[in-house]
Image (tube, rainbow, N blue to C red; front, side, top):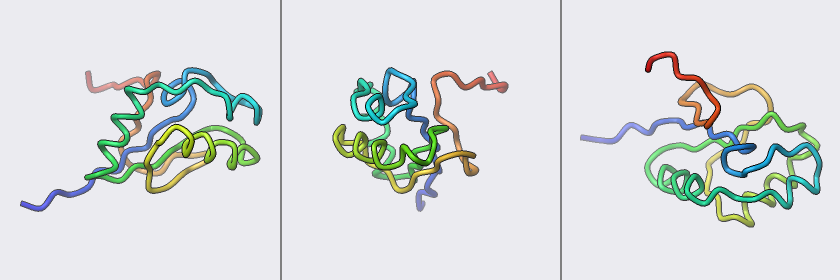
Length: 97
């Protein structure tokens, strides 16, 4: 049976990195959360990973540089509202539990 890819919308701040970043310096120097980066990289192999963030668009390049520097694999990015799919955020509330 063919696997239907799942869309995962993965938050950056306080998820892939420990901090919440609002400046270029903060974005470039954020502390990575290795276990979540490993999880994202696993999902990248079989599903569709969108890196989503509420960061201002002016922080696009520092964010991309941080993702590259920390070996985060993804298919797309989203700055602002999140597209449909599963939202992966440690602070998200799941009403189905």
